Image 1 (cartoon, rainbow, N blue to C red):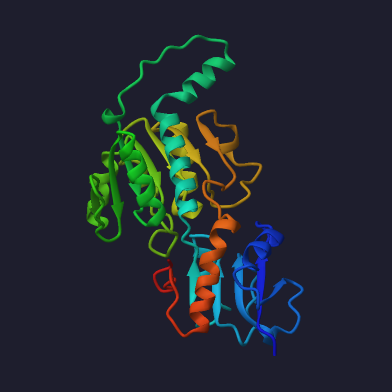
Image 2 (tube, one colour):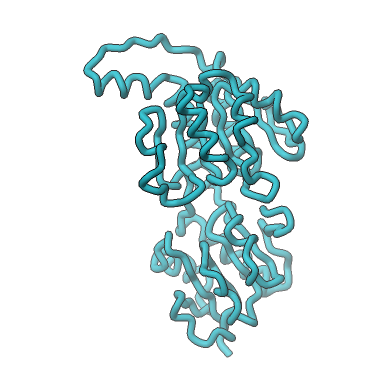
Length: 310
């Protein structure tokens, strides 16, 4: 019996991933779903949002690799076998995310939407810049990507604080933890960046009540998962002006439906879930490393805890 890896993703190039993986795993047969051959040969699955029932035929599966840092779409399934599931932990993904968050924060901090509007109206509109240190930025979620973003914002001189479910310690960062600390945290954020994993506990965590805790005219950035935010409540806050601007990379339903009011809002920037993506040539080595660890009986790195959801 040959040993095979199966690849599935509608969002990624199978050819790029197979080409990147092959030098690290020259003895492993590479198959791209739906052409899986004999499913009993498949010992490893590298996937992004496979269809329900995908894993059922692979009774000899030993490892599932999720093509990204967010695993909410994987751990909520009913067909996922009881075996190691790992997520990607690529420094290039962290840098890509940190740069997108920095761009988004700078765009709001330097009043770029106001200048874009003035340009469309052929109107000279001077807005005096504020010092970064006078602008309070909060990051919800201090995992690998959130921590990288917080440190980048701090490096640029912003008055940064972070919040997480459990206490974290980051150099020079005011780190808060726990639900009791969340109201005060939100009340201090002129610019809020959502970077939490999507779990049962974080679904609609940012609802109308918590949006109301933000200062009047706050800016809102979501680069995590759409369902963490109650989208109708966010739309209402944007329409009322309580949230003055938003940068949204993720949504409750993707692609964003054509009839969403968000499309027509001049104070909203919409991007199509691309703040950070996996790069095959840099991430392939860690996928291969975990396959080698499974083969040698060692514990895998970056293992997901399905109970926690990340």
